[in-house]
Image 1 (tube, rainbow, N blue to C red):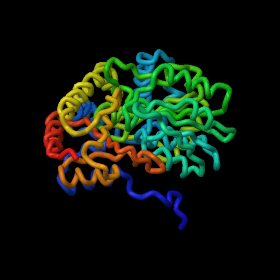
Image 2: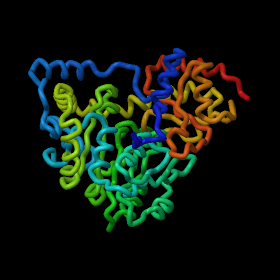
Image 3: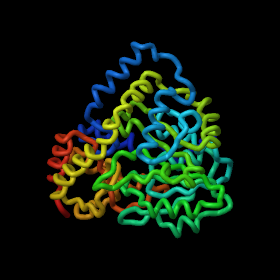
Image 4: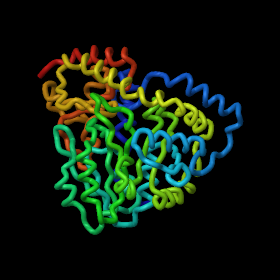
Length: 382
């Protein structure tokens, strides 16, 4: 049998989490919280099961949830979204990105990908017999290189994938970034796939620049969100895609033959939970405290934070003061020897580009962050 992904093996997140478990290491590698979700949200899901929300939900999602999402989008981004024709509930954001790409790509279409990037993007493109065109982001802050992006557009360019706040760097796109994207895609047939799963996790009064704020850009966009990231429930695997009717129509054609529908009790619970806007408006402040605690305890360690994260729950760090090992070898070394797992940034590049950077995750209990810093304080400076 010929593999669709012949050069792909177990991804770095599964590998590092497995290594962390093997060595009883603190897992600052994979992006999942180690603290509980809201008890109220759990109560609402239980309520749904007792009320009989235990059969198939409608294919696009429960109307009550889509209505609450439309209200939320209008409040945050001053946009009028149709709950009926423009919102589809999905089993996770990664699924939504795959479905969006599958709904538009034909063999040999090109998709511009800005690297480093979330590791599902490129395999999604390849599985659709399309071609990823990888453009590096500009270090040290990982902002888009607009001239290189513009130069990469050809008659075969079908889509551009964007991600803000950015995983792994924490860069938050600016108003000017969005205007640049709008300018280079106007009067083209290019579709935007906008990964906005960290929309509620921005710091230092930075406002998330959603594609939903820009009508001309939204008219050609799939915009993807995650309840798992927002409400600390990554294991629930529930997200949603907002797209204009013509794109949502194509998206749902694929969706109906993949999962068809999504866990009904959790949709009910999320719909009721969204009725209180404080449940999502307080997320940034919550994580900003964790980021600041992380920086406070890691500033004395021999890592170099060249750019402080402005969004997501990740911080990049250089280990140049400690080692000249390749980044994956370094990540394995500190996991085995110092009991803290991190992610090498080369895993976010198709060609394995190694800038001697690792990603650390701070969506953890305060005591987890403090204990991780304590363990790493034993690393000698070379």
